[in-house]
Image (cartoon, rainbow, N blue to C red; front, side):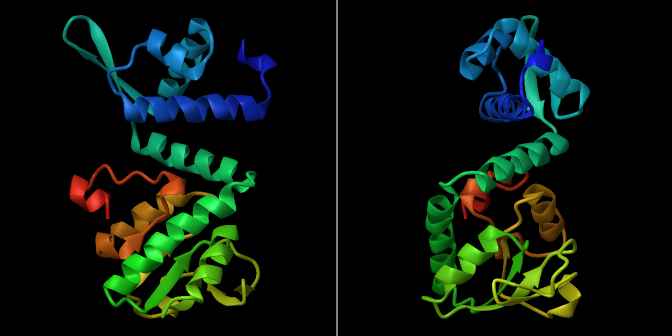
Length: 213
């Protein structure tokens, strides 16, 4: 059934499914099909596939119903697919401009002047462009997979230990932003790890007031 769909279409349906599950754990297969705009059988196929891949967890709840939850792997895949589609979209620049302007204002309010970017991508280029209007110094970019020593006129490093301390750490990764974020908050103060809303990085493990910072 899904073999007739292009890879882009399949990825888009998967992303929409993961977003739907994230927004409403009590959804049904019928409501999912309606949200995705696909036939009930196709929605069921994608849901089962997501469960088998470990992206979604299904649990039985009272009244013989089921609740669906995104797993850590599901959160990472949702963020990855979001970044993938954004990288192909002309709207990336506009969305990133607004999000990074908010992050820059956030840093200025807290008198954070030194930041490190995580990910040598178009997002790093956009952030560095707008950072020029703020009293912010970008120490460098951390990207373990980068091949060039510089990107957007900034030095690129394989790991953070080469740069020393920073006031804030900004996610600019377009490949796997969720794992990058998760790794950073496991060793750094969460309030100093900042990510643009457009990447849809999950911060579900944090209290709500922390998530919204």
